[in-house]
Image 1 (tube, rainbow, N blue to C red):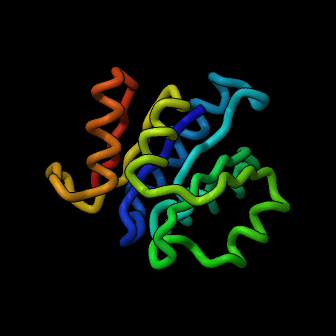
Image 2: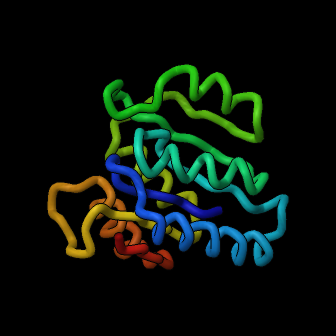
Length: 141
């Protein structure tokens, strides 16, 4: 399982291309039955990552936020329920990010800045992944 975290601003084309490449590589490595992309269902990069994974026919496991303004709209979730996707009940963002890191073996991050930012959910997720000695791949903008 791969955990994805990214900026609410959305990914650059470079980040999208990097994500596609890594999903292709790791999909072959894990095999289809063990290959799932975990993400937070937020606006921006999570939504884009979900679209990429959906196009690649990769199963997704979504951990939405309790903060409505950060969450992709309910129509998104209704559509995803029909297409190779499991959705957890909403949780506080930092808690659900930690849960995704604990479940996944690899963390792919698409931050809005190449420099680590203290008050950023993406960078907080990366720091926690490093603390747990997870493999972390960062696609800079």
